[in-house]
Structures are given as C-alpha cells and as structure tokens.
Length: 564
Image 1 (cartoon, rainbow, N blue to C red):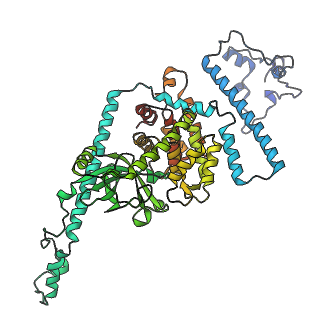
Image 2: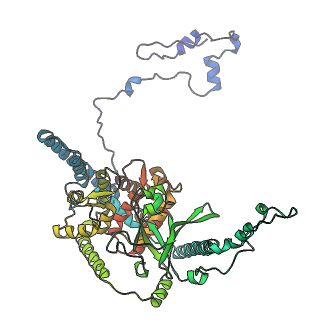
Image 3: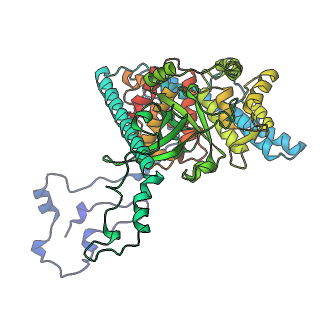
C-alpha cells in the first residue's frame, strides 16, 4: 500500500483524484501483497523521485497583462522577394476594393434608374474585368508576361537540333505514306471503274453454255484479276499524277478535335483538281490514311474569288481554301454544323511549286490588286491596335473570346455589326468609323449582315503565323491525349514544368509561383472553371504572341514548359 505521507496531491480545480489504493481492478483476483508495487520498490528500480510535482494548470491561462504583439529581437531584414510580394498583395487588395466599390455604385445606380437588359449586364461584367484604368498594367498582365521568361532560357542546342531532325524525318515519313496511298487509290480506281473491264465477264454470261460439272463454280473463282485490261481509255497514269503540288493544312475551327486534325492535300495541274487526305495514328504502330475531300475540281466559296476555280496561284502558306460542308457527306458532324469548311495551308512543297509555276503561265487579274488593297486596310487597323495590345494581349484576346461567346446565343459563331462595334468599345480598342466600315465591307462579302467572329478577330487584330500556331497545336495535342477537344485544369497543372524558367533558375521565384501565375491567367480565359478548350488555349497564346517579335523566342515559351 502506498504510504499516505508520500501520496501524490493530484487535486485539480477542486476535483480530488482517487488514490491508487482505492482503485479496484476491472477483472481478475488481487495479487498477493508481496507482488504489489510499493513506493520503496519503485524507488529502488527507478532513479526518479516518487513524488510528482503539483500540476499548475492555471499558469496555462492567457494573461491579460502579457503583451501579445511582442516582436523578437535580432530578426533578419525582409528580402526583396518578400517586399515585392507585399507590394503585389497590397496592390491587389486596393484594386479589389476599388472594383467592389465601383460595382456597388453601378448596381445602386442601375437599380434606381432602370432594369438592366442581358446585353448591358454582359457589357458591365466585361468592363469590370477590363478594369477602370486601362493605361496601366494590371496584375493579370504582369502574371501573363512572366511566361516570357522562357524566351531567354539557356538550352541544350544539340539536343534540340536532334529532336528537330527527328520531327522532320517523322513528318516526311507521314507525307510519303499519304502520297503513296493517293497514287494507289486513284490509279486502281481508274482501272477498276473503266467500263471495258466488264466486257469479258458480260460476254461469258451472254453465252448460254452450261458449266462443266468438274469446273469450280464461278462464285468461288478469283475473277477479273487475269482478265483486267491494263490499257484503258483513261488518261490518268502515274506520270500524270506525279505533276502535283503537295501541302499541309488545318481546319479553321475553335473545336479542338477538328483544329488538330492532320491534313495533307494535293493539287493536280493536269486537270486543276485537288484532294485532301487525313493522316490518323492509333498508338505507335497503327496508322490510317483516309480521303477527307474527294478528288474533284472545286471553286472558291467566299471572298473576292468566290465562284472562281482553284488554280496554282491560290496555293501558298497562309492561303485559305473554302468548301461547302454539305457537298462532302463523309465529313464529321462537328464540321457539318457550319455552312463553310475553311482550310488554312500551313506548309507547302516550295520546290514543286516553283517548278510547276515555271511550266505554267497564269495571267494577272484585277482580283489580285483588290486582295492587296484588302490586306492594306487590315494592316492599317492592326498597326493602330498593336501598341494597345503589346503588353495586354492575353487579357484583351481572352476577354474578347469570352465576350463573343456570351453574345453568340445561337451558337453558330456569327454576330452582326452592332455586336462588333460594342465589343471594340467595351475593350477600348479605338478604330475610326472609316476603317471599321472598310473592314466590314471586306468581311461581309456575302451581304447577309453577319460575320464569323473568328474571321473578325483575325482581320482586325491579326494572328500569329503558321509556324507559331503549329507549336500551339503540338502543346495542346500533348495535353489532350484523349482527343476530346478540351483539357482538364488538373492535367495542365501536372504537365506544366517551370524548372527552366529564368526566375526559378536565378532564385527570385519558385516553381510553384510560376505555375500558379500561369494557371491564374489561363483560367481567366476559360468559360468553365475545371477545363480549357482549344479555342481558349489558342486565345491565350495568341495574346502572348503579340508582344514577342522573334519566332524562336515564342517557340521556346511553348517548347520549354510543355516539353515539346
């Protein structure tokens, strides 16, 4: 039994603790007295004193006299990095409070005066996103401009050169596969479709001769192979088909699945016909080459050359080919939703083009002069807006994309003149009335009063060249491995790598800070919070491209973080 003289005083706030001797065991019989632990035996086995000091819980209560704002001494001075973070946070808080005040004032005013229409609500929201002071760079602009840090990033030139050589070899292999399939399709079709090929079989069927009982039935025999006439009336031969111009193309679409299709086209000079094939790859070893546009003679369906037949001079990098979607039944349903199918030539066999131009003579016409004047009209407008978009391209281009989608209630991508005028006003893109009317006259060539807003953006603001866009598509195709046309934000976060950013290398920022800045600016372009479509992804880099002069600098901005 524990000595009462050494009994521990465990009384806490008026509640007395029960001594060890008073505790009854939960089950079992008591042990003999000799086997029980005593304070003396416990002391002999342990060097610690048997008496535990009183636990003073009252000392843990916060004292009113204690200074809660005591600052430890000898703290190191804050670094420039955290000073910059503090200033950015301070600026963001001020801007958010300013927006909140303006929003409350505008809502109060609108509630007193009149009820807002849906159109006015869209304009108000976009004006708030655009922010009141458009002359200064916003936090969104600064975060977007951080992506330019990849432009001057040192890289392994030898490794990049090897990768580029491998890409060129793979592209040439694709083109060769498609060219061989085109020759096989059209030469075999010419022979099989010749009416004279059936003469031998028709002659046998006309002879009413009973078949020999020992002869194999006709349905089991391999027919027409040894009876085919090699000489046909068709003039289509391998030599004739070899006089062709090969080019790469893409579909002008905001749909990711359609925009990333690999198209290879051929223009044949012997009859001025053209055909377009699609190269599709399933896994690493399985490929498929199918006709996308059947071989035939086609005409322009819009523009200055509307109704005129395609000729050799219409094929160059950046040219647009137009077709009626209803004329091609094998097209995907997403393409048939639009009246016109527009294809952009992204690459061309320049050697074959120069050779064919030397052999053919094409006369100059007035349409070439008109098209040159049209380009000058758009160039003048783009030069006026270029300075406005130089550092704010991402914010304005992504904002315009969302604004047009909100106005497009029918979902066909067409808007009227008033919508475009209002959009330029909301985003403070000042264009003179004369220039706007000249551009509208060119864009509205069919006279129905509606224009595709993709065409409007390309005409008024301009677009990056096809070399840059090819890398935008490469990056999106790497992210969209399911070929669904949209990429979840979580996949973008996983694939984005900021290790080679200049600020990360210098130690001014961390990888997570650069990644978060990119995702914040990209999410502003998205209509859905959890995924990014191809059109929104393209708008982001379209805006970033405006402020970058050198093509290789822009390519590094895509190649380095995405590993393409």
